[in-house]
Length: 288
Length: 153
Image (cartoon, rainbow over all chains, first blue to last red; front, side):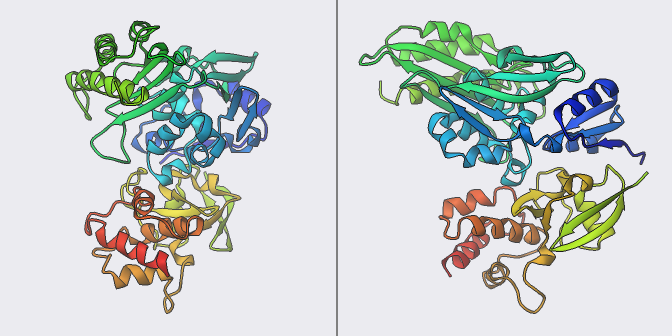
């Protein structure tokens, strides 16, 4: 077994310059729960690991005004344990709880869940629904990218050579909004989603009218998607089962799933409709 | 090519030379003969390799040994003793919650961390807590009973 090179940069500047200089020859290591699986499956076409563990500033939470900033190296289990996060972003905590197992959640990071760019990722899907912004630092400085512009394809992101995702910024959703996350798999736990759905409904206060809706779906296309047509169909309409059914149908029509080892395209298409309808009904409070 | 590292395991310091690609699990078993930690799937699924890192359960097959430097690691060898079992181990034995036993060290480590942070869990919390430990023999009923029993002591 040929071995590989290994670095533990002590700060962000060193990490960026290492990654920029080594290019495609190296991979960044965060929690390792995806990277080690890929290493073991092999063959790998890279020759070194840049372990980001020394970048302690990329860990933890900052609440400021209407915005929370989460360090990219924050463990998934820390999302679950943070009570303020649970209060303001309960759907993010639901998704975190559904990711992997306790053992995996103690290693895996929020940044890794995004950068791995799996169409089935749970936490990343909810970040798409919450309209998070990603803070990225690279050789030519820092930039902010909204999650919906982050993915290029399955396993591919807009990150350029030397760039590191440093933090995730999320604004509080509109007052009275209610979100729901659904994950459909063959088992209750320890599962990669066949389909996952995250929705957020904002009611018009004191009425039965929906002000805004957000619908994000995963594992039904090469990247996770916001379904604008379905969201627009719910804008400023009275909440009825029919309205939610129509939005679910539009969602179903907008996706383009594949057959793979976990499921078939036709089943995924069917289920994304079912789950979207159920999630919308639940987000409205279940009574129609 | 090997890299010199120092690991903190069960309160002891071990100086080793390891390849970068070698996992903590393989170092425990092959270099340190701490074979109580089991190798099941070797891909972060089954939980047989569960150890505690800074008191939290993790899959030792998903951690490079070089990445474990500076962390306090506990393995099943650090729990109880041959003549005096940990109460978790006693309860698993008393409830017949062991058949082939291959998952048991991982279960003990997970439950140790669970009860350290939540001494009186509900059955639901116990079931959720052990979702990362696959047991193909017992159907989990006796495992859960044993954990509930020890948590009431």
